[in-house]
Length: 261
Image (tube, rainbow, N blue to C red):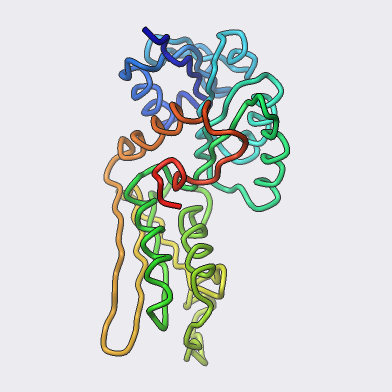
């Protein structure tokens, strides 16, 4: 019988971290062995004492570290794992092209460790971005509206930025924005890749939602994904956790793991 994969979680005491710990603990093919959170040293999550330092990952013999923290911490955690031979699954938002290039350098050895980083681990959200890229060449205009809870610190979301990147890569033939006067600055949203407008909503009571609205003469197409609970991310997180050891180097997004590429 194959031994369970030994897993540690960064940001273990946060709302997402606790959800991840619970999902790992409930999966018979995984074993939660380490929980790290500098703001909750000494707390207990799923029977594991939370420790302050990343060294707890190595001391516990973690094979995979899951990271849902903040960008500055995630950069440091990734470097730690790369030098300690620990695979990384990263869901922290805010990684830009330079960060991804650095991750590619850190996780580039033939013998591992490896890394999976994704803007969104909800499989429905991954499918939404994939389908948006497929639809893009057939429409004249497109805008993205993303909504998140009122404790999210960054805007627009990594998922919205990633979606705009995918759409822009699929088509560059967009009608010009007819707006000549903005009565309030930013009324037309931020501009993502290809000049695609992205509108960010921060709303109490919300978890996460995104719409991609395409327009052409006489018709619109709306692709929408709603997240009602953080458990929606767990199938994707567990998929990446189990696959990262056999997925060499750096993998960006879940497309390859879902055979979408």
